[in-house]
Amino acid sequence: MATREPDEPTGGQLAGGPDDGTAGQTRTDEVRAATGTGLDPNQGAAIAYLLGALTAVLVLVLEDDEFVRFHAVQSIALTVVAVGAYVVLGVVTTVFAFVPLIGGLFVALFAIVSLLIGLAGFGVWLFAMYQAYSGEWFEFPIVGGFARRY
Image 1: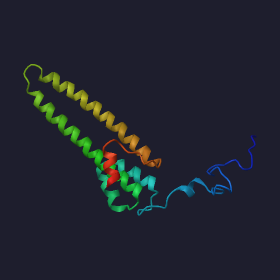
Image 2: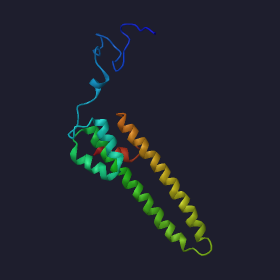
Image 3: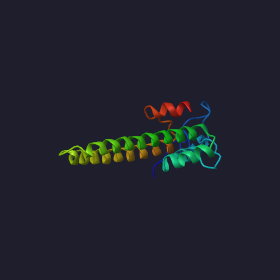
Image 4: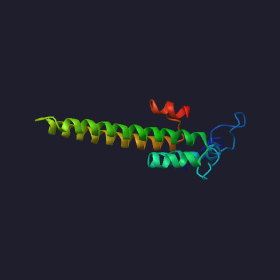
């Protein structure tokens, strides 16, 4: 059986000693107070991404924690960007569909682009949920700055 030094951190105990003020604290001591719904802030922030703008608006209305609200606003902004990208792609696809002889080729090309955008969006969605649940203030380019100001 392996032995450990007496002042080595165990389980959820933080490293440190009496000099740095962390003696006896556990990781759960670090977690901020529960939010208005009784969820931990990281759970509320992850839920904000769960169904895009739908859960983000709900979380934004129910929560007053700054971390949770940041992720809710960022989720709304990401949803608006994703929907906007699909609308633009749909309009462009419709316009090019009527081009004689090569319209079908453009439609096939835009279908592939649409699939790639969807896969990328799914990856961004998973990454955002993971970052929020991990307690990170991760900002996406452009929309993160908007969310920070709100």
